[in-house]
Length: 228
Length: 101
Image (cartoon, rainbow over all chains, first blue to last red; front, side, top):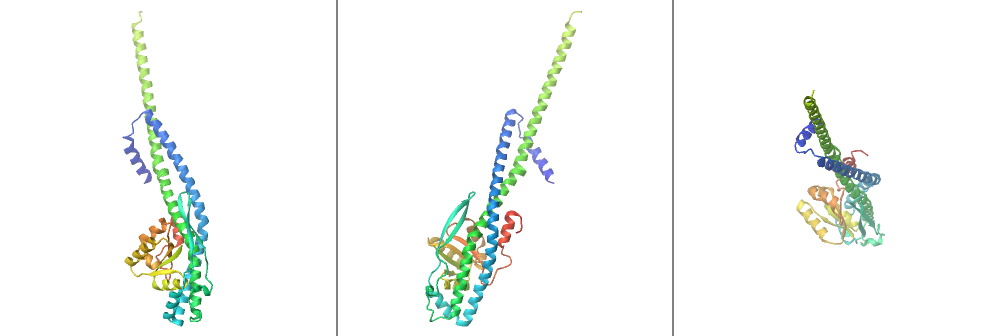
């Protein structure tokens, strides 16, 4: 099927190709450029893949860790709401002070902007949480720590996950361009080059033959004119 | 910079115990508004969106995940757990390189 399409493309395209030496040289230059581009893209994809693979293991690990701590946190929250009452959870939540501060920067890997998150402060101390530890149940403390652990897991994952998603997107895009060059543009240019080359050769042979014909007829004429 | 949660009320409550501010939303309009608000404030470094809310505005979230640098947008599991039709990280890997890890 693929070859059928290819032939159709070739037949259609060859009608627009003018058979001249200039065109032949132009095609050769285009092929050189396209191959160079293909090599560059190939290198880019290899480099992206390397980075991707390095990130993938960590990300999958951290993703699993997050699933566990997220399930744990929401379970603890449900239990606490049942034990201490939804109202006291809410009031503790209102009193709770902000604890996480971080720095987000971006780095460029082969032209892909990937984020880098630097966490500045980790889990807070019991007293640093801002709500009164005397007035609240221990279940609330547990819930707070469970969610602190979840946030930490999320922040660790966010960094690698976003990097992975972006690298993956770029790899897909690069592969698509690579395939276009490899399977469409370069074969077409090569077919055109071969077509021009063949047509030029054919023309040369025709010229050669015509010259020989002329030469032979001239010789015959001379033979006839020669006095006997 | 700070972390902000946009999502299910239960998740927002839990995260605020951990000292992370949040905004509870229940429909796509509210979610869009919350995102706009978060982008307007210069202090937010990471926006966590729970999966159930992300599902309401999936195209926007996907686009932000790929292109927004500050703030970063991340999907997190909803309190109800992960929905099965959510593409996992393993599938992202699979789609990108055609190899299952």
